[in-house]
Length: 306
Ligand SMILES: NC(=O)c1ccc[n+]([C@@H]2O[C@H](COP(=O)([O-])OP(=O)(O)OC[C@H]3O[C@@H](n4cnc5c(N)ncnc54)[C@H](OP(=O)(O)O)[C@@H]3O)[C@@H](O)[C@H]2O)c1
Image (cartoon, rainbow, N blue to C red):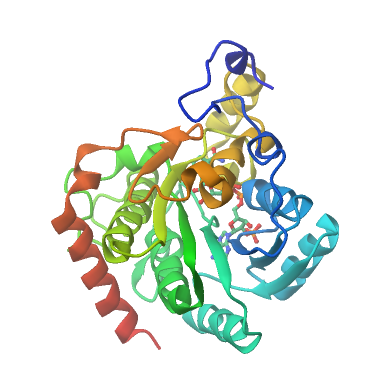
């Protein structure tokens, strides 16, 4: 636990910065629930899967390859269904959707957890900047493809980040998603996380009148493999501050798990959470027109993919 956690108070949910995924699910039985977690082989996704299975849920754990998913699922020991889902490969994402359909799995929650951060140079998939493609487009295909699999009270949890505040001024630069002019590792990561947040907002709008929910979360700042692309100086500084200021992995997984399964979050939709409580997002993340446009543009992009 970091020193910082000792000096923070819990919020209205009763949980806060220092809460862990085990603490936010203490006393809950998730028997009979099925929850899909992307990026189950590492960091927060692995911890979320571990704790959800500990509480009795069956977890559909996805990773870039079936080998990785199987190895991670075997490590947690509980009820799991390992599946491959390479988010930068639409065929892999579609095969994952097909596998969920073929197994007739009904999903109580989808935690869109996988992600990449701060690629030092412009990389692309299908002509689009890779962080935008992986973090947003890959999950857009997956989640929209699985909507009919959600139970009546199904919850969608999108891993955003406080870094959505580093997105460009426009929120999403729709005319600059490919050969990005003025490429910046953090701006492009921020844009992808703004896209995750806007997607949750628009999905919540589409869920209005149902008991399904969609929310976005900032998990905190945690040292995981996510930092592998950061420049070495920044990684070093992260290492130094870990014990003072960063969350541990169990604390980092708490917010996504809380929003996915805690009874108190069952009717909350269209919100941005941090430290297991509703938090304030950048103002334009509440721009419904921007969210609608992102959905439309994403549909157009997906329609043209092989
Ligand atoms: N850690 C933080 O401080 C922090 C802060 C804010 C937000 N977040 C968000 O939290 C989420 C989880 O991050 P983490 O810290 O747990 O990072 P992590 O340990 O690096 O885990 C990321 C997961 O995403 C998977 N992934 C990456 N690219 C993928 C692709 N193309 N297709 C499918 N899966 C892919 C990784 O698979 P491989 O292992 O095979 O690469 C891994 O399983 C991310 O969405 C991140 O943006 C984290």
